[in-house]
Image 1 (cartoon, rainbow, N blue to C red):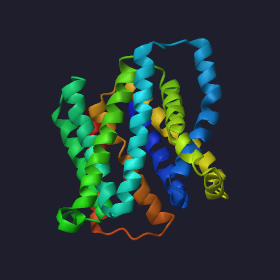
Image 2 (cartoon, helix red, strand yellow):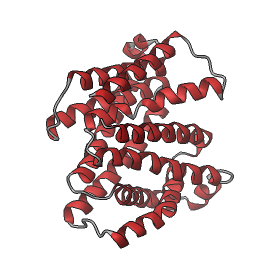
Image 3 (tube, rainbow, N blue to C red):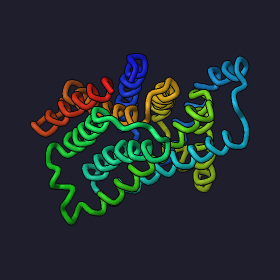
Length: 290
């Protein structure tokens, strides 16, 4: 991975960790908040998209439109699946399984479908990051994931991780093969996601409006940081970095979130999380050198 791509992924990880910390303050709003920050993102990034389209028409054939629509649908399915998993199982089970299996399946998919070459450093880095993510999220108690009462969460986590892998590969194909500008791609996919959610919100419009009271400032911040973080990832992919390296490196956000939790939220960091941070750090070094 080039230094430029690594810097993009690091910046993306910072943006991802930041917007997730902010979004937690609106966790009770649910799909309405997802719709709200998606709309905010579309509005905020429209000037950039217009500028790009005026200077570079890009590719807008059937394949490009289908890829964007599919990306929006899979991103939406991911968000709703993750939320459902949180409703029926423990976050401490669903989240680490989802964030761990996502990059692992993305890497396997990159080898199988995008024909990316596998390297010892790349595979080793991916495994370090995946194990590190699970160590942080479970505070070192990996055995918890194998307990019978955790199986529902594990299943939802695996499904969510598979959706992460799907949209990662779809989006990589869009920017690397179809050569769609990353900003335009994410903007259009975000708009598609909001459009898919809109009919659901129309069933109880007043309830949706009430749910967002006092939360719009959070929606604007997340609406800026969430697309920005992912656009930077897509730029790294368009720059030529393999999915098998970028997808695991994105999980550096777990390390940053842990550090933020330690210093900003005064959360305890035990040996499990500390070891997880070390593993992610070592994994990113391996990925960067591959």
